[in-house]
Length: 379
Image 1 (cartoon, one colour):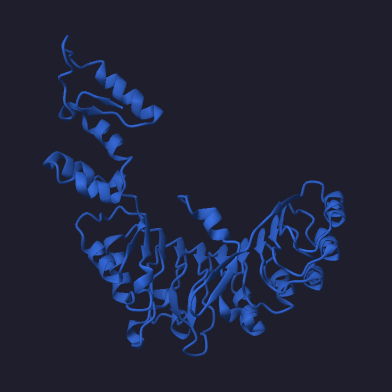
Image 2 (cartoon, rainbow, N blue to C red):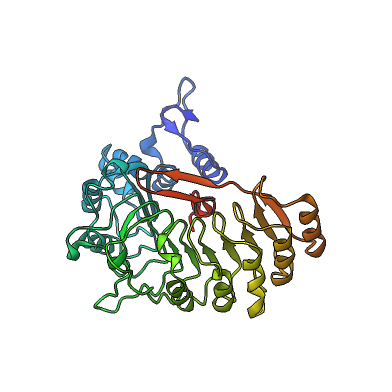
């Protein structure tokens, strides 16, 4: 609310601070004479904390005091520009801004769809990100092209800052042969825990390089990725990711024995999303060949070929299951669901929905589990 020239933001803690300060101010019988200039810095910082990055850049033009306060490191741990569609050139200009402080821990930028195939982000731009944001831990850079006709300008996974714990390139263009190419310096993103390559356009310019070693990776989103059709590649990938607790391969062409491979290499897996795939009853039964998925808590089977028989297999191989996601018209009977609930009394059945995105060349299908988990999250 507005009191004279003083603006008080929302939030209980901010109100308490502001009211405590107001009690020390002098009031005239006719009007409230104190201006916002009289507010102490800690109150202004709490007010500024409700502003986004672009708004902070604007208020820094008001006066020298506001300029200094708007650059305070506590306000810039998270820079979210996901509501603005940027071109690669604008991204470059953003990284050159003095307003981009080194305290940034999370950066979210979304590309302009109209420029997706026209121009690309270069490895040099990623080095600039690492230079300007040495504390960066979470990077979500969606709808950009990371592929170039020039080999030295194609972005590799190893080119991203080695401080990252969370990386999402959703909806971007990636060169299949160059992206997984190893770094000459041996950089392997050893801290990376969450990797999202969902709904990316993988240009099959050559054979895909072997999947890299990512020793700390626990969550992998590969929704719609085309290179999982090779059983050998899929097995090699999971062999290097034994710490996975979440795997999303919805809308992919995984082989019939894919879930058997998952069970043999990912014993810690808690969340498995295989909607919009050819998964069927025998696929679920095969997970029992390696002792089952004893830690599995949730599974998505939307738009699969699983029937009542498959649900019984699932109850046997995943005794700790808490959530199963199905489609309304999937061919599973109420009796089949009831029998599953009898065997797993704590399980909850949720009705999911496949989200299909169709472009001029590609079709992507899946439930969008990454967005459901992280769209408004700060983790």
